[in-house]
Length: 313
Image 1: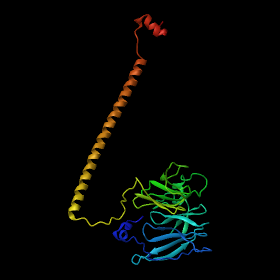
Image 2: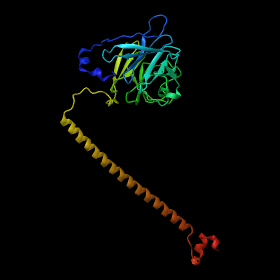
Image 3: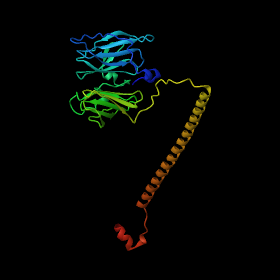
Image 4: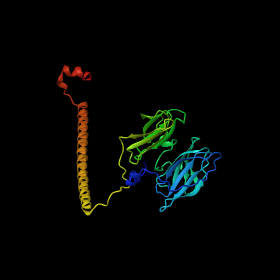
């Protein structure tokens, strides 16, 4: 759902999912073998970060061989998490990770240095995704004080909409970022049990939600899907004629921009003229009022003047 490669003819034709490689984790979890809770690929496609559910989870890092596509485990970083990892997200520069744990923790990790970062140090960081249910941009999603009501969140790729998966069976949509307490939302009903996960398609045209006990996957069609300008388009190279058309279109667009600048300047000039005229009219009115206030009257006006100006008597 997140890759343009998923729409290739080969995948659509076979519908198969091929396991290319596996990797072991370095977390020491007592008891049964834990499952992998969350996996995210760095925006520069050089690292895979994941965490297992169990005990005090570490952040696991692996590299992907460009030719064989095989994974190689490189590091297991202990970030002093007090419970199992729930969610993780990469920053756009592939330098930082945002982490949530089952103990309601929000942690930040400098991947290269292998150490935790403070919240104040990452306040201006741009995040490639946001699926952490604890954090500044999602603090308004909580309906009450119980932080188990929301199981998962997903920010749209346009960074305008936030979806939540809740125990109530609702899939809610919020405006992103969602920072006001108990922010307004739009609810969507379809699951007969709690919702465990939500995720947007590559161009936000669809939202996929996964139910719990109802064992149902729902695909919701959105009305805010946008074309992803950064997505790789699998198209044939344009011929020279198409390039000429593109150049003509670009020149036409530049002409329109120039015309728009002229019209904008004309509108601004008219606005300034109206503004100056209004100021002049106000000044004239003030002058007239001052003139009336200090108007001279002739003394031979008789009783009419005395009625209006008793001090003249």
